[in-house]
Length: 267
Ligand SMILES: NC(=O)c1ccc[n+]([C@@H]2O[C@H](COP(=O)([O-])OP(=O)(O)OC[C@H]3O[C@@H](n4cnc5c(N)ncnc54)[C@H](OP(=O)(O)O)[C@@H]3O)[C@@H](O)[C@H]2O)c1
Image 1 (cartoon, rainbow, N blue to C red):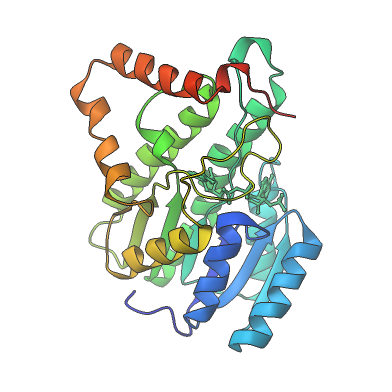
Image 2: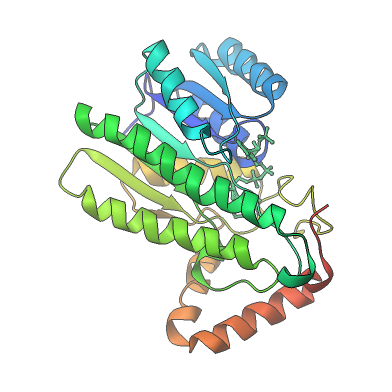
């Protein structure tokens, strides 16, 4: 895909943060939108704004992608409406914060439902339609957290490691077809990601608008990976390849302890 003009893109987690920025940037580049998240009002407001500002068509699908039937509900709605997608952006994600054993299990389970099962199921439903049609693109938003274990964000790091491995594997399966898959690995991005936790965002975080533009540029250039935070985020992924895994876990633990995550919790 060289250009987004007149393409139809579905963005999950479009109600705020990086997903909202990706949706606005896609509309500015001429793409029609299907906006998915749980917050109906925020999605409808965004749909209206992008439609009037950029003259693109916009659809809203309100769905809980962490629910067992969430992805199927989205796929069924698309097929009822006969909406064909050129691009799927699996962006919705969340993570539990704090020491694993002394905090409630629920947010951990919720993050596996959204970041792993929901992403995989939606990719299967929509990617298989793309394969039948012979064209399309998929962008999976993982995280820099994918490349090493993340003490005090243990399940979050593990879900993003899944997205990294899954994305690379399906990209290889699809080599030689007209379906392209890219993984995006943001570093700290100034969104409400930590809003439901005791943590605050790194003051050096990049803006979601910057990250969104970089991700879309990288995808349209045919890249397999996108590091929208810049070269230092890409270089940091080399460390776990060079050190023993236990040493890497210790370093990541030190980093997250300095950020106060060992005393953090999901609210
Ligand atoms: N911010 C960062 O520093 C950072 C760094 C690396 C990677 N990332 C990744 O970037 C992606 C976007 O995160 P963000 O920073 O933009 O976070 P955010 O501001 O918290 O936005 C998360 C989005 O996901 C949606 N969502 C949450 N639970 C959902 C569910 N059960 N079903 C459907 N949608 C759901 C939310 O919408 P509703 O609440 O309306 O459902 C919202 O639109 C995530 O995959 C995250 O892991 C973020």
